[in-house]
Amino acid sequence: MQQKLALRQGQSLLMTPQLQQAIKLLQMSNLDLSQYVDAEIEANPLLERAPEEDKPKLQNLDEPGPDGTWEPSEGEIAFDTGHALHAAGHALDAPIEDISHGDTGSDMIGTASPMMSHDRQTHLQHTDSSNFYDGESQAYHASTHSGLSLQEHLATQLQMARLNTDDALIASRLIHETGEDGYCRANLEELAESFGTGQETILHILRLCQNFEPTGIMARSVSECLGLQLAERNRLDPAMQTLLENLELVAKQDIAQLMTLCQLGQDDIEDMLAELKTLTPRPGEAFASDISVAIEPDVFVHVLPDTGYAVELNTSTLPRVLMNQVYYSEISTTPLAEADREFISQCAANANWLIKSLNQRAETVLKVCKEIVREQDAFLAQGIAHLRPLTLDKIAKTINVHESTVSRVTANKYMATPRGLFELKYFFTAAISGLGSGAAHSAEAVRFHIKTLIKEEEAENAVLSDDQLVQKLRDLEIDISRRTVAKYREALNIPSSFQRRRQYKSKRAIGLAKNIG
Image (tube, rainbow, N blue to C red; front, side, top):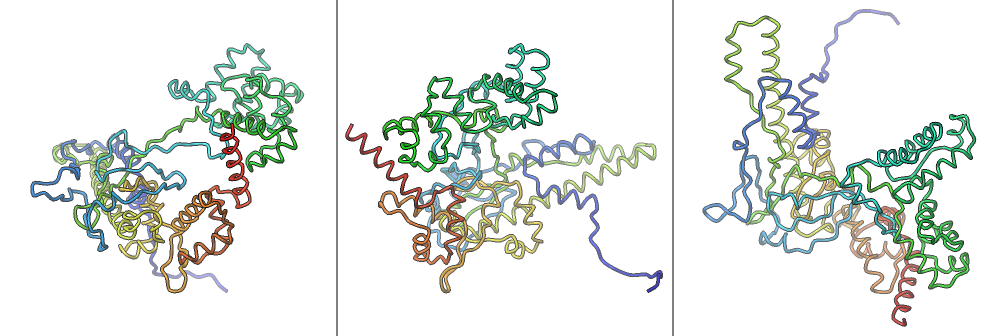
C-alpha cells in the first residue's frame, strides 16, 4: 500500500448548463414551457416571440383539403398503424367505456377534431369518493365567486367575533391548523402547553370557532363534523349520535346492527341514513384553491380518413421563439465595451441553444407519442379492455433513446384522443400473463374487466367472490391470483363480496318497501 501519482484516461458524462436545460425542457408541459420561455425572452434581448400568423394552423378534420383528403399540417407526423381499421368512423362509433382512473379525466371527446374549444376542455374535479355521502358544500357558490381561501374566510369571521386578544390569538392558531378539507388537526394538549393555559380553554375557543360558516368547519373527526351540521338542524338526538359513533357500520350498510344499537326500526334507520347523505363530510373543500383545474392537452391524436391515426403537437400552447438576427447584426458592428460584447455573445449562444432545444424537444415528444399510439391503437379503436401492457424501456428501444428520456417526455403531459384526455403515463401499465401461450394483458385492462364483472353481478343476482372472479378472468385467458384480484378490487374502492351482498339486500328491501307504500 502506497501513495503515488498516475495519469488515467476515462469517459464520463459532463452535465453542461446546456444539457441541463435540455433535460429540464423535456419534462415540462407545454404550459410550463411557455412560462419558462417568457422568462428567457425577458432576460435575453435577442429573443422574441414568433408572430401569431407564423404559427402552423391546425386543420379541422371536418374541413378536408381541396382534393377531399386530410393532410397533416406542419409539426405533425401521420402514419399508418398497420392494423385493420376499416373506416375512420369505426373508432368514433365504437362504444366508449366509463373509464375511471384516478385523475386522468374521463370526459370523452366526441369528435376527432384536432382543436379543442374552451367548453370542451377536460376539468379534473376533486370529488368525494365516499359511497354514502353525496351532499354539496353549503358555501360552494359563495367561495367560488369570492375567491377567498378557507383561511381568509375563517379569519374574516374571527374579526367579527370580537374575542379578547388572548382568545383571538389562540383562535388564529386553531385556524392555522385547519386544513383545506375543513378539519382542525391541532393537538390541544401541545397548544395548551404552548399558550400556558388549560385544555378546557383551548377546547372552549375551538367550540366558538366551530360556529363559523360553513357549518361543520374545524371539526376534528367526520362524526364531529356531521354532528355539527345535524345540531344546526336540531336533528342531533341520541339515536343519531349513536349512528355517528358507528360510521363504520354505516359504510357497510349493516342496517340490522344499527337497528340494534339505535333501538329503532328499519324505516327509521333508513331515514337517518338518507339524512346523512344530505351532509358534507368535507366542509372546507369548496374553498380549495384547486377546485377545478383545466388541463390543456400537449398532444392531439385524431383519426385519419384511411386506416391510421395522426399525432400532432398542440401548437396553441407550444411557444415559438425567434432570434432577432437583424438586431444582432447591428449591435455586433457597433463599438462596445468588452463586457457588453461578451454579454451579447452569451445571449446569442443562449438563444441559439434554446431554439435548438425546443426543436429537439418537439421532435422527441412526437416520436414518443407516435410510438405510444402505434402500440395502443387497439385501445383507441375498441376501448380500455384492449389496452396493451407497455413499458418505458420498450418505447425507448424502438425509437433508439434512453429510457430516462421517455420517462421525462411522459411526465406532466396529456394526450387528447378520440376516447378522451389521458396522461401519457396512463398508457404504461404492468403486464398480467395470459393462459398458455396467450398474449399478456394490461393491468389496467384487467382492472376494467373486474369492474365490469362486479357491475353486472347485481343484475344477475349473483355476487362474485374473489375466487369466482379469478375463474371468470381465467375464462378470459387472464392468469391472475386471488391476492392480485383482491388488490385491484380494493384499489377500485369496491367492497368485498360479503359487503356487496348486504348492500344489494338493503337496496332490494328499500325498493320493496317503496312499492308496498
